Image (cartoon, rainbow, N blue to C red; front, side, top):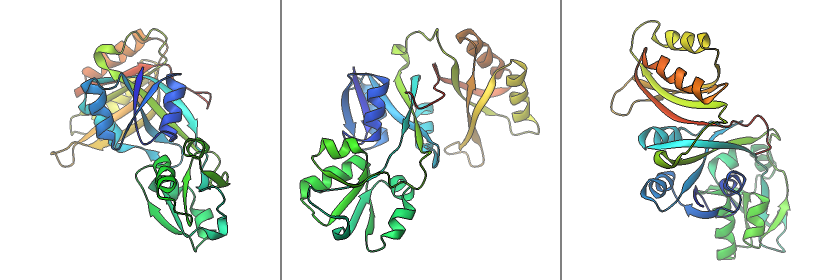
Length: 275
């Protein structure tokens, strides 16, 4: 199976794709929109996308893309995020003058970077891509913050391991397929849904009460603005379910209260970092 990711080989998205689809062929993309275009257009069979980080929060753009396209979430995985300072073989930490990485990775290593104030911090589009850039350019006074897999992938060296501020750093990834290819969901214990409600008192409360009455456990709720309609919002929820049939009942119940309801996917949820 060919799986599209945002980023380069060796990235955390690459690691997630391997957990979600062992033996997958990876299709690297520069932008998230390109990932979805590859999936919808048939260049990829699936996509592995980060949807939420335990420290940085949700990846808002991916909620919008899930709503925009005719796709379904079919699985999820949790990946432990371990950041490392990576440079060319033979480089030393005290020689590093520039550090490249994705803005989220840089933000998650603030204490380390503050303690090494002579290092100039430079944002890049991808963690693994930063290692690739250094390897190709031969910058001996530059380093990247990325995974150990990225160091192996590009023949670089880890100067310092585990430099993140908080060890409890996990990212939740979705495996996304075209809706027509999503297949069965008989073992699903989780459903993700997008919906909108009327702008009147109690409309959202009515939806939440309906979910509670059906015995489903709401594990996440997120709001996103409706493009082109100021101060109107789409709500995204994740619910734990006992069966795929219960997910169908939840969606039907929401239809009685909501102007729009879209199922984003039903799948087997993860409760730990086991992938």
